[in-house]
Image 1 (cartoon, rainbow, N blue to C red):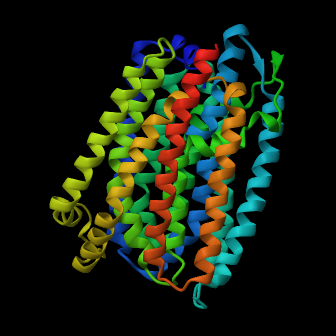
Image 2 (image 1 turned 90 degrees about the vertical axis):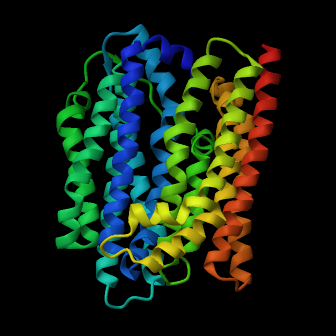
Length: 426
């Protein structure tokens, strides 16, 4: 990602607005999980919903957010730096084609999962949920492309506000809708958030057709970079999927424990990573990378210590209300303890990978492709291994997250080596 172009176009106030709204969004996201815990607890219905949703969550991580930003933001930043008016006809056309492809792929994977779930009472409900999740995935992708266009225009403050409005509106309506419509209410509240943001902030961007035509192709989406750019979340989501393959509520405890553990990753580590990228765009200094490494390591060790000492009482304080019982607290705490060390690997890897993404995509494409292939081979290998071994889903999910997070850390070390080798050649 070309952070020189990005940070050059962003004022200090916009930068502060981005950080403050990021923190607000993390609190809102955490509040959503607390609401869902109080309404559904560890019910089998909610467990099956999470399992089906895992597919669309995985596609979202690969096609939206940081992954999409890593491939497109520098392109739009450079375009708007040289031209006041840009026609987005081609962007709309290609985005719609990819949107349809995402819907079809998500259904091809989700529908077998609906069939796999042993729930004759809710088959039609889960089929409906699968279709709506596909629609939400498409809207999310399409909106994300134009949110990045907004950032490319230098409107970072507006972007931050727009995405905060999206999350706030969906959270406000979450509780009443889930009370009356159960898991369907989760989807309805998400759609309300999307349409609130689109109506207020994205409509003017969608309609831009005048100006210089953007040369926009499917090849602009670098799949390898998109995968590596969001590898931490991909690992967690894939492990969550493995945790749900037992036709039981085990996946709910995995989900709640990750919400707690992931709070530190999203609230602190990712903001530190952004600062590291900003510094590296100005000066290539090994001290910056070492600083981020030791911060990530220190926070990871602190997380393991705090979970071990105060995890149970923290989970009880945050989640134990409504349908979330004492037994749910104990089961979530046990999962959180078992998962905590894997998050140390994820913290370190997330920090060390950042210099690699500060390089031009042309320079990292080959390395990114190799690492993406290696990671994909491990994913397939784990699925094959589990299909021939009858261990339980909980144990399989722990095996998955530890193997993949350790692999993530090894690849991050290699990425630092490649970063300095490429910089030395330059």
